[in-house]
Amino acid sequence: MTTPIEARCDHCKQTRPLFLYEPDHNMHAIPVPCEWCDREKQPLLCVRCWGAEREREDNMPMSAAEEEATAFLLGAAANNSRILAQQAADKATCDGIAAATERAEAA
Image 1: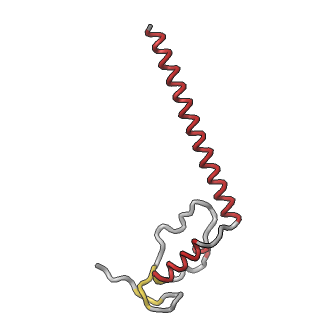
Image 2: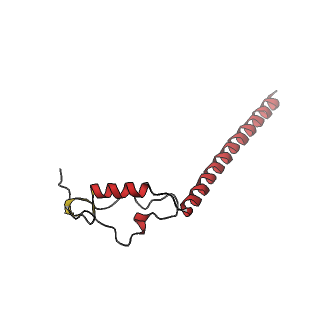
């Protein structure tokens, strides 16, 4: 088992195991960067400070740009779902017509 990297936390100024990076961060579904991504220099935070910072960010209300992008994405998803359902219904209709045609030709 490896020992976690310990250094001085930029927030609480105590020497603790640090959270050096967020592996899946900057993978936003909407093109609006979060406060974490907008920082010029990412701080080195211990797990406790990083958790508090992340919770604070998660509890922040959405900006108007985020709300607009979210509404667009939800509308696009609903539209895609409707289109896929219509395509499935059209295929079922065409398959039914093809089957009826084959039966009529065979008779």
